[in-house]
Length: 107
Image (cartoon, rainbow, N blue to C red; front, side, top):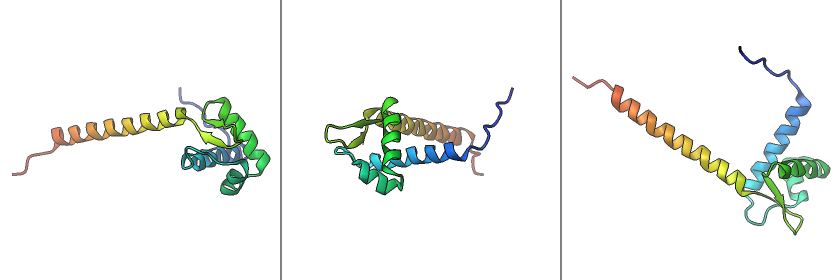
């Protein structure tokens, strides 16, 4: 049975877009992380929204709050990125094998 598509929910999409923007901003700010104000400016979110999103991301282990009150991305995010890269490398190797095995010889 085919899953039903989720209804369009712009408010949820905006929340998700903002969370992704925070992760993208933090991915380039290691090891010191970014302040709430920096994240608000970069993502064009309000400071309270940044605080809520970072708290939610921290609950899932994607972001951590430093003693300096700055936020930074966690090693969990790096492990995910490494798994994705490894999957791409495996796919690339598999495609190369398929190409070698199914390329017609030139006459």
